[in-house]
View 1 (cartoon, rainbow, N blue to C red):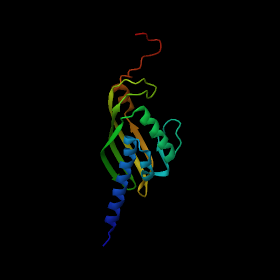
View 2: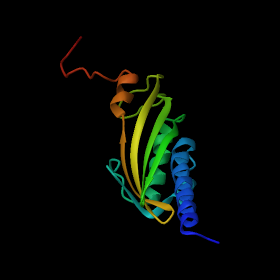
View 3: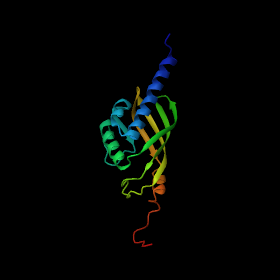
View 4: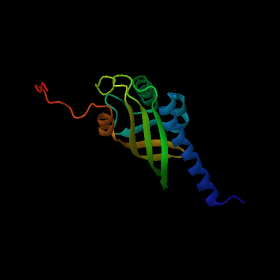
Length: 153
């Protein structure tokens, strides 16, 4: 007998798989993984500078990020589900081996936290609200504190 709980558990498992595909695309550079993970009109907040909504622009963004941070990996630490949303706590690691954020490559490792919320349509992610610890990235790579203009020290 198929119960409502079985259906809910199957949907949650499919949504967890979508989250793993999403972060896996960022970790491996295999943007085709987004075809399963995201709706075609997926959007995010805040949007990356100059990026349009949709799965295809996100694929282009992944290619650019992987070029700048080629060893980037994201590890999901926790996922909390509620109705049609999920909260994710994750960690991004890598080496600042290429210019990024206008900061020349330092060769230094970084490990920053991600806290993100995802809204689903069926088993795919339709919308993402994200916050990454980019201040931590700048601090760990030595790009912080920024020297004020005219400061010769």
